[in-house]
Amino acid sequence: MNEEPRKQPLFLTVEQAAQELNVSDAAIRSLLRTGELRGFQVGGRGQWCTGIDDLQAYIDEAYRRVAEKVSRGEFAEVEVGDE
Image: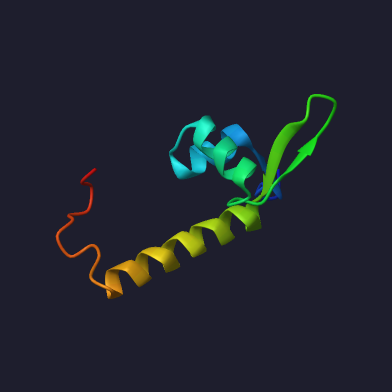
């Protein structure tokens, strides 16, 4: 049997996006509400979704912001994993 590999979805639910970033659903909802993560509501209950490309854009922007802070020396004394 010749099965095609499963394509990655175009859109993610709040739960799926949270799982991808290893954060809580509430964190994703907050990002959606503030517009920091682009998304939209669908269906009668207004379930939030975000595009896989929008999630990647959020990640890319987060990396860019951190790189700027590192270049300014703002993270000089912080070790990775510290909270």
